[in-house]
Length: 337
Image 1: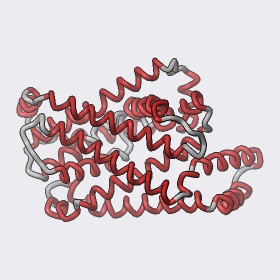
Image 2 (image 1 turned 90 degrees about the horizontal axis):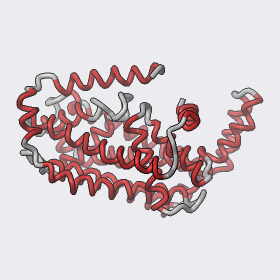
Image 3 (image 1 turned 30 degrees about the vertical axis):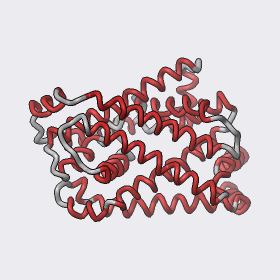
Image 4 (image 1 turned 120 degrees about the vertical axis):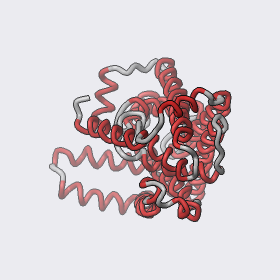
């Protein structure tokens, strides 16, 4: 609460909430929410849990060169990570699951974080590919909203960033000895002597976490799994849409999914408040959905994405006998600083 970036995130969320709600008739919004058919949330949430299981499988696959851990043991840790992302700022859940993996499976935090960074890079590439697949459709929507109108340029910049990061990680994984020499050169010249040995050790463990990127087959498997993961998440968007009185194509929801998740990389209050909602409403209104319906759908979708996985993560945190103690909080905050 005392960190400046927490309050910056809150301020950004407030701005996005204002953008999302300006001009909204609250009586119409409430009418949309009241008359939604919430039975459609059941298959939507079920598909989302399959999506989370696929994410656990992908993490198990990335960690195989470090330690073979069954997906069923990874799934609770992944859900705890989602819970952490949803209720703590700065995506602390990613660090939290690396810390818990260390405690439960004795996998080094550096190696775990390397695989988590690889996950985020592949997610970014797939997320932006969803936008590029829909660029012809997107061209028709420009000018309807500031979020949508400038997304083509943002997509190009974002794609260059994620692909550039992926290339760097692939090179580091394929040529570990060269990476160690280059990294060692920088460490010896730019770090005080008392930090050099520890930093070198962390670099070696981090490279261990990239071992799965040394095989073209493994790279293809991770990419295909990432595509499946994001298609499953879009499936949840599709099921929840049926609870409301509007219809857009699955490709339109893929576009919405890509834009929304691109926006949630912006620092915000915990739970991606505002940064999820404003772009989602903007995309749907650009497709001709009235603002009240777009706002009602996006809010319910956000809650359906946030609440079940957060509750399940809290359950697993308790069941696994892990307590959000001062020591765990301090360990997570230290790495996340």
